[in-house]
Length: 177
Image (cartoon, rainbow, N blue to C red):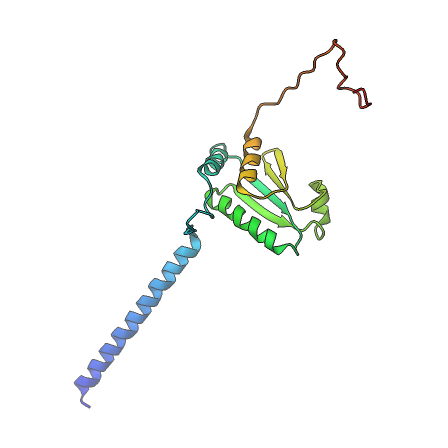
């Protein structure tokens, strides 16, 4: 073997090593970008993992008003299938809005948190926005979005009572009230 053949092999080997290193650097860089900016794609025919436009609009309203949304989902740890189903739904909301945070609480293990939030039965989901809160026991997109819409309402409901014509009194708790 002469010196030109060995020099040629060294150059080819070095070129191949540099090529492998550059390729691995590109793969690592792409992986880093993907991990920093996760994106979900719903490839189901029915759009099962995509929020309805109305739900996205409600979340946009919260973002515009700069109102954070906090959800506490009170589920038992042993109820893992229901927890995962709710987690998938809440992840869809979180993907749309950065003002949306949620956590799961096992009311048996974290009794103080359950008592503080006045949890009487579970599963219960407490949705908090600003100083308001809503409670739901069914976790589907329609129910969660309706609860969020209720939290956006600012007007107080008025109830009127008619008096003086023999109506029952709203102020008493007896049978005649």
